[in-house]
Length: 218
Image (cartoon, rainbow, N blue to C red; front, side):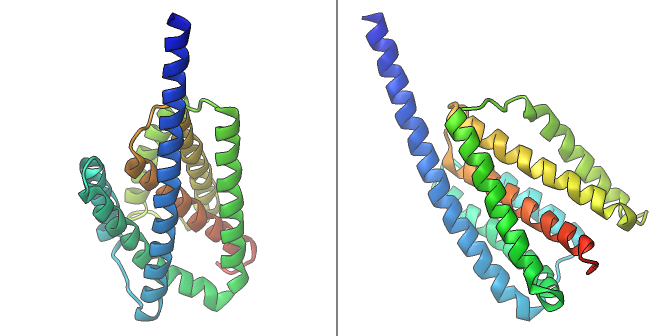
């Protein structure tokens, strides 16, 4: 009887994990599509968001998403969040498309391949990347510190190093969040989808920057 109960709990857990994975990727797909539309619309408008406004927006709206993730408002704020990032990304994409459209295509391809590869490895292997949690927490403070420092010091000579670090952080965040879903540590698909979307966005933007540097277009 105890063995049967254990098997039943394991089966229920597997069903729950599959449900969260399905809902997460379903919402994530809509988030990527909506953000892309917002970026496309903002490109000809030349929308320019001040770095301080962007920082407040990305952290402020993310906080609201997490606070409302267990209600129907969580979905609404999710699309506000990804739409905000899309609008902020539009002018940057327009700049790269004007210089060399292939850079955007290559960055998209590398981002997609990296995300699929990391996700599949974590899901299939049921890898435990919980140990990355402390690294990601420290990384947030490093990123904030670098952002503040950039107002006083020209960090452009370190752009390649900083972009490389951000790519590593994004990859770690994808592995960490996917691991939490697979191992049952994350049961809210709204929070999971938002985390993965931000990871993809960070990965794409910094791969684009690195490709631009190596191509001599930055």
